[in-house]
Image (cartoon, rainbow, N blue to C red; front, side, top):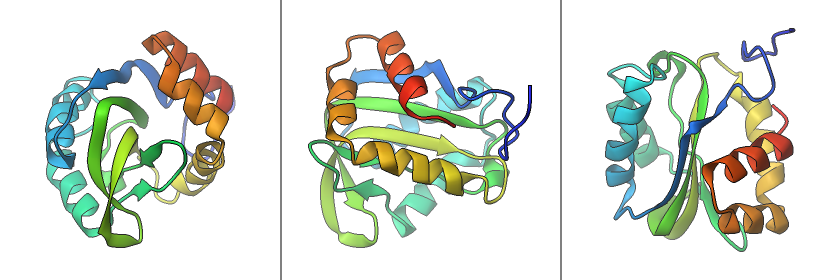
Length: 163
């Protein structure tokens, strides 16, 4: 197989069914990061510095997008905190208060979180563009919202987001 610019061996190597979390409540971004960090750490995706780094970056550069009909957040941090690339998808049971990208004073209510882990500098630009093109597709967001299982989400993600 050919490797792409992020060092992945195949198109879906950033999506993993065990990194899909459905219908859990979170009160805020810190609670979300505190919950997801041990999963990522024990899976060998991130190192010990990831939790502090992701919280610090999110507070400085918030990542919620005012997409319709559901709000999406895409937190990520610097490559030195990531061991192997991943996208941890979460559909919240309610919504998570999340500050809007490029508008720190505006709080949105995030339905979906795409927690992104990159281990190649500048390798994320292409991926972010592909994700953004999906996020403006309300049909895609509706399908994510109504999917019943992690496998259904995994199939939606890997068939709609060509990495």
